[in-house]
Image 1 (cartoon, rainbow, N blue to C red):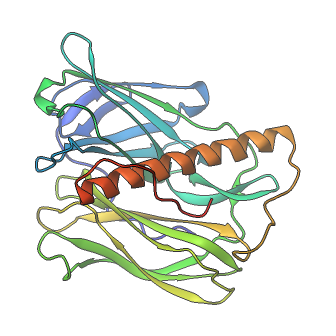
Image 2 (image 1 turned 60 degrees about the horizontal axis):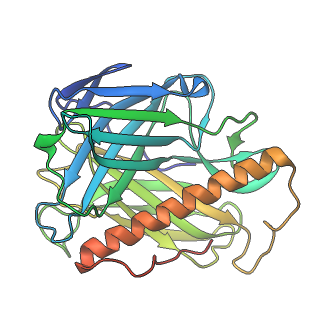
Length: 303
């Protein structure tokens, strides 16, 4: 099961969108939302574009929140964004997937991130554009939401349990730094585990994201104490968080995923691969931000 979910909703300034008011740090800048037909129940709750004012490499990141207002799980939800200037010129283009609960689609044991009905999930993206992004130059945002159409998605039987997840000040990094600490317990043997937390600011927007990873095998019944450190400093105390976990089934040396799949499940597998590849690129850019240099190659988690 996914980790604890913090205070719901967002109360930042609103931009107008296809689903009504969208909380945003861009004030009244219009946010135009389009959806594929099968993503009609997905609502963009908030948008928070954050250029790093101290970055010498023009680092910028975006945090969004997506709510599933439908009756079925929404799997591998993808958001594509085009931030435009007054002339309709693209200032920045981003894309990201929602981090949410691990589900199983058909017989494919690779977990798919799915937003359960009535729940929301965080979406993160980042970039290193050639020129600094000035939010004052953005006069319109076009957002597109899609998902992987699938039926029969169920909570993954190997999903670990998460207990005690809570926000705590990070005393190592000082004021404005927070963690989500908790314990993840394996119900079956798993590996390459990640716990991801999105922190909600006092304005209701998602303002930071952090993760902790356990790459080795975690045997059934074993516990892993995690600490997901927020990668961005936060003003005040976080109002809540959204948490989720990811993993691979079996032991680290297992080849259980190497099986022949029917065509529909090949599509699911390929979309999961795209999700993981994009996340790897985003981690690389975040690492570059910390190092203050552009990347030569992306650091890899186990595929």
